[in-house]
Image (cartoon, rainbow, N blue to C red; front, top):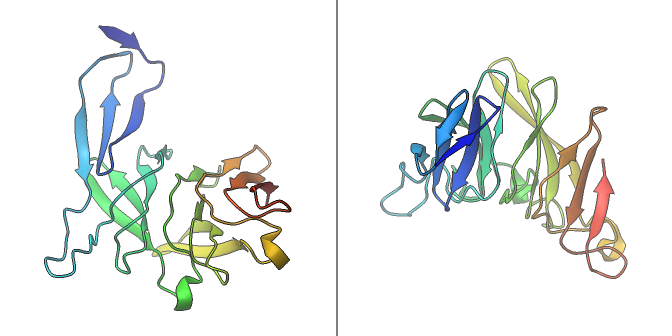
Length: 196
């Protein structure tokens, strides 16, 4: 069975540990899959920490150079997740979460990322931040790497009125506004919808 794709490539996440892409300019055959990278290939034998990341729960985005960018909820230098880049079949870690005191830079990014027109990445983490209820972050490409900025610390208002526990990703509009939801918090503790 053949399916038509108008895009140059369709990227998908496979299970909890393999990233794959089905490529083709016009058609791709159903059932044909090429694994690009298997997470946890760089595992510490004693601690079990996957230095290259593990559990990429959200979708990937594709930049203008064809690289795939995503987040892994576990593993990394501090075992609290990573942001990664896949070029061909090679993985490069762009950011390791929980490198700052008390994970103020976030921990456990459960969702995918969004990319703005300038190539900056935006995402959320379920944990980390002062209340350990998650953050929204930006990763900006700078000379020599990527710089992470915390855009918002969730559950920073009394009774967590601003929401917490980020498990869903962000959406970005043409003006660069970010939108998202929280799993908990808000007036009735049933979650929130927000914009940044």
